Amino acid sequence: PYLSFDHCPAMLAIPKVAVKTHLAKRLKAMKMHLRILNKKNGNVFNKVEFLKDELARAQQSFDKNPSCIVLGEEEIVYVQAYIDVVLDAKKLFMQKTKNEWLNGGDSNSAYYHNVVKGRISKKSIHVMYDDLENAYYREDVPALFVSYFSKFLGTCDDVYEVEDVSTLNMKKLDAEKVVELIKPVTDEEIKDALFSIDVNKASGPDGYTLKFFKAAWSVVGKDTCSAIKEFFVSGSFL
Image (tube, rainbow, N blue to C red):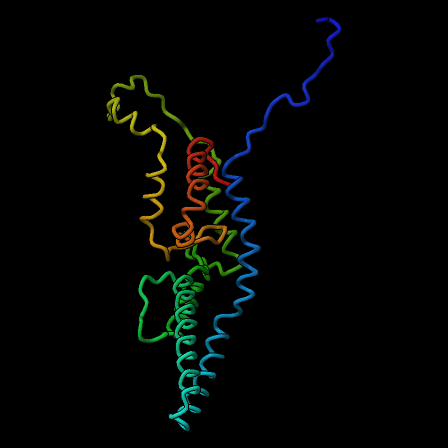
């Protein structure tokens, strides 16, 4: 009976799991496997030095006995291994320096090290000056920023009313262009935008570069498009 009916549903509403959270969880979970892979491969720069020494040893042995096929094959193996690990080191430096070119003939280790140091130095603010030319160094710089922006952010100011808005020179879009602005983005548009970015550009906060998304698009493409579409609706991505 209606008056004696005391049933209450166990679930009043089905929560909507954000697709962006689903993508973030999958990417976060994969980091554990990437760390294992990175640990398994070892330090690339140590491998460069190790294989360089081993290659030198193999070449010396083969020079002493050039008729030995085994020593010749050993040298070939070390040459290829050394070339591969040097290329890996170059790619790592490229990612850190965001340099779009790679010299195929020289490792340029000193150059890339200097570029990395230079970029780190550029990102640091060593000194700032206020309106009176007073210098603020390192630990005092944040206080200067706060003082500067506090002068006009969060303060009251006079606002003048406009009696007739028709007097304002406002340009309007026609209905067709308005519809174009508000229509949902498509998977093709998202893919084209992502694939137009160079693979060596800066990675996101999670550390994943565009090269990863391009290479694994068949796996992560659907979730990535769904997360970006939700961003245009909710206004948040993480």
